[in-house]
Length: 323
Ligand code: FAD
Ligand code: MG
Image (cartoon, rainbow, N blue to C red; front, side):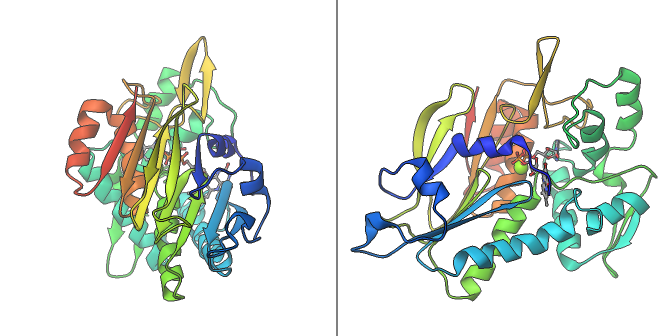
């Protein structure tokens, strides 16, 4: 599996488990109980590289790490465009495929987000992500002609879902989809279900910066330290309720400069260019990790005003925008 710069998010949003601990101690010792807390419940932590980023699991139940990692690996095997035999890679090559219920579900939810966000969230941006060099990390500014031609392949209305037999079909040859803005969230939701099935009710999962909190930490609600990504300053501590996820999207992590201009990996599907607006990042907290993931990307494309309007249509969702 390839490795990319998202690991830097470890320095941007990190977990605290209710007491002051050094990052190196917290992250580098794997699956060992915390000595800070020996008189009370022991918490174990475990980490793994999955979906091109670090995943970390903290729980009083030693089994939690393996449960989360094996579920994530299963979903990665279906949805990763970086794995040639995944369902998404096959679909992108041949344009029509009978897929598993997981893959069908996430494409269907993605199409719903496309509608709810007036097209700001669009998994069919994949060909644009490719021409800007964000898939292979060979960043470049494409020609205007290439952007215009590629825009013709974009639009989730051109993804046809055959509900009766789970077949997904593209209307145009050359279309592709990219679930990079939603699949991590889906994997977190699925992992939480697997944990609960095994009777595990307290666990924190950090998927390269997107966090899911289940139950309680060592000292009550799980607490997350947030840094302003551009200014690299701690901007607050957020307490997550017992089943909540926090997702951040922005232009501070995967980007390049060309002629002094910053280009980030989140693409505006209407223009074909990396999204530029009045915000540098947006953090979304929601009960569903899939929803937090998709909404943070969409709000980043829409900008502050329209993004705030959008979030109001998702009850219980909280957002913080950095300008
Ligand atoms: P988000 O804001 O959540 O998503 C941004 C990403 O979504 C972009 O990078 C692009 O891919 C896509 N996107 C851009 N614009 C839009 C838009 N308007 N609407 C919808 N989507 C958009 N990376 C690797 O380098 N190696 C790997 O092996 C690897 N494996 C992966 C496997 C899976 C299953 C997934 C989901 C991702 C994988 N990645 C891998 C990609 C990497 O993790 C992504 O960069 C990451 O998903 C982006 O997440 P984010 O939270 O940083 O940004
Ligand atoms: Mg996202």
